[in-house]
Image: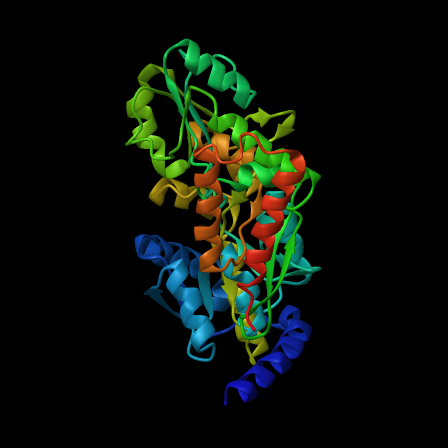
Length: 401
């Protein structure tokens, strides 16, 4: 049954791509899944959409509270029973495409995505040459919160650490986290991704950690861990005597309270001459393939509207989600959001987080713990390369057999 549905959906993609532009209205039912805190907001916006588009005035839209993580899981389990439009996080894109849960975004809709949104979010919704979803936010990642009365120049991590030490304060950076750790490796020019098959199994790993760039990144981590001002951590609320903390937008309130009048934020600094990178996170809306071309066109029209500049700005006002829309990012209120502005600058140097095996995160923690314990301080470059070769070899064992 599952294979039959996949075949039907594959046919639907072909038919719908060809016929979507010809559809001029729809009066049937559409099911939409969004996060609980955006249900009321989405209801209001869909009412506005129907009023502005009379060809969809008789369309019935059912909105259900299903968060981004649960939505992807449910779609992967049963595409046929899933929503017609649903929100999900970027790390689920490959798996959703593999089960034919996403209709390609083509023609003027694809042009809308690429021209209206920031490059990071566009990359996050793209596989190969095909766009599969509509960017909705660019607001998950990490950057530097700092006390501007202590850190007057946040451009280099070496400088931030030295300025903090001179003031008798600390810099928090969670280098034993597989999420934060990529700031060094990706920044130094390394790649580390996994590929999945049609069933969502991880079948290949692409990594250049065991390389000259990887050794450079590991040596940077060792240098940071040896600095007197360094403290391993990322929670602003738990930071004491801090001059700077690497964290994300969720910590903005705590950072304002901690730093007071000195509250400031910026993209991550450079380290050893390279710009620190890392993971970026994005929320997006996907459209399920449909046999009915009119319904598909309606879904794409609604998804386009719900990810447009004005709606992204209204969503920011309503629930604080940071926009991916370029024009919305230039809005005065968004620009005045210190944390979001810093994140927007940082995301230009980030990679969208894909699917990673659970054991990777534990392995990366172990690598960071060894750095913090000074296990690698006296190792040669060749020995450090061996550490990274073993890291890669262990990650290879996480692939589906």
